Length: 150
Image (cartoon, rainbow, N blue to C red; front, side, top):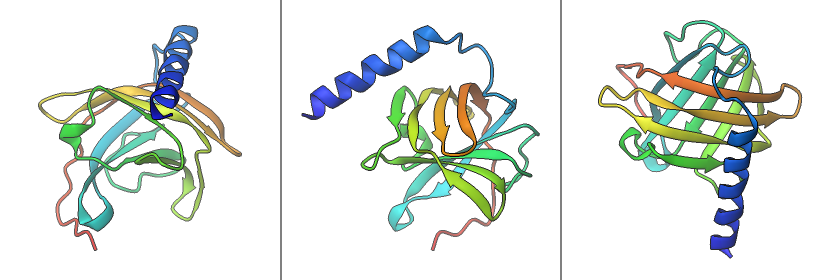
């Protein structure tokens, strides 16, 4: 059953990529950054921020999209990550630090990770109120010091 689900998802992603021009950043989110995040049991994870303004901190001014991938940055390149109950990925549309909504469907493709940890990829996400966010991103690594996972 997993093979059928993965095959169906792969066909869906290929179709979606073929139908959109995919040349620009997500609507209104011209800036991106990737950084370390805390995973389950304090393991490594990646956070990707998409914002209309340059991302210089972990909580950019709203609105922004935050994508969480439960994997080390060295393991995320060249993969498609569907939003689902069993997926190691989630996405939030944040209008402020305390006001957000969770993506209900979609996917993130992390096409590559360079030696300097810049993550390149595509998002196609749907949020209940914010709607559809889709396009390409290039997220340079944002080094953070003093992060403690608890």
